[in-house]
Image 1 (cartoon, helix red, strand yellow):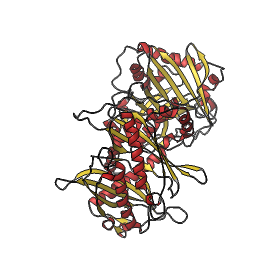
Image 2 (image 1 turned 90 degrees about the vertical axis):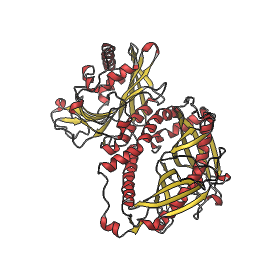
Image 3 (image 1 turned 120 degrees about the vertical axis):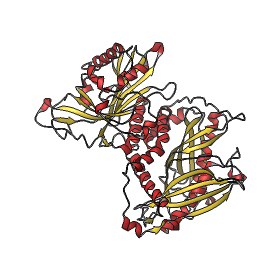
Image 4 (image 1 turned 60 degrees about the horizontal axis):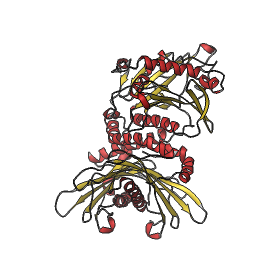
Length: 607
């Protein structure tokens, strides 16, 4: 998945860079020479991948204190090309270590020495694993200790990215099995170029210069060879020099050593209006023995006109059976890329807030939901507005966005508070802002969709599609995706995240103002003596702000009474066994989504 969710923190990251020392950070700067370039005097993507892999590997080994190998690489989208004579600056650091694997963030920027201009080229995440010891034992990694705000955000969101990686292949399978992939225009396909004409096969002998200090073939070198054959395949279809724009998430399936022969096969899987996908497979073999599948990758190319705009491309005619399967899978991957671009990269100040929910984008909506709350919680410059009996109200103003946080310590274990607050259907018993809460869709064990009804705070809510002269009698309702997460490691909080979505089955109702929640939810952190720190966050949309504005201004303390009611609710139910299911689950629809494979049995959500 792309890294664009963290774009809002790039300026803060530059400030953190000067004040915080990260022991895992490794930097590489390379001036682009003609030997690194293609025929257009632009840095070849293959060479860039080698530099990226080397930098990330050194960062991983610095943290692990042992040899590491590349396990996978998330999507890489190349925003700009790099010309000969310019400088490539690569920075890598470990965001989070799990048990035996770690996530390394890689930032690539370009520098023009003559104009002193700097710009970003790409940003990706790689997963590295430690090599086993001589006795065959796995090396257990020590935890990463984040220092800066950006490092805290990356550390927290890394758990969500890991979750998406583990589900990536299942998302494609489900999309294909659901029949939601559109069929190509048969007339256009029949007139297209036969896919067989784009097939490329090449063999490379792994020599010592291609290997790392562990005598394993550099992952970046393998990718460079794969880019080479993919470019040839793409050129055969478009009969022009294509530009590589994106490499989909890929996983290394096994190692390769010096002396191996690498068999590289590439073919155009599908061609769209302005882009085409090439599938590449790498296999390793010795003089004797079977071929070993090392890696498969999918690369997206464009052909640019003189103005730098993508040109229309000819269609492809896939071969029967296998070719048709690859063609359909390419369509599924394109849909997933569009979903990720639309959801994960959406800036929080953009509208509309309510992204349409559907099964194919559920994983990314859930990722965005939880990640947005974690990023909000990690923000700096929260200001204490008011405090009463150790219940504190904080505010945060950034650009045109006002956020608030209410927190207090409660005498309830964190896991129990999580179970109780995740029961959104019970919130009506302690929150006067909740008149009704209806579970309308059970996505999986971790994600639920609710319709929440709240009192109207003012007459004729702004932006309401159904506002009328009924005034104060008009209620507000929200369609909310609730996502909950247990801690992924020590020091992580329990998370209950909320955001608005739209459902075609639940359009705005007559007599209700349809409100929207951008980012809201609870974090629950275990403290001393079996107590927990409960924090509630909300990025105030126009429909939410009136509920809290008088508290922020110091004219009332309704936040205090609401939080006291919440604390009493938690205390009353402190010793009761956690519910086995959500109220109303039987009435709600269920989805057998791929997230079912990873979900833990608990409940969902809150506002």
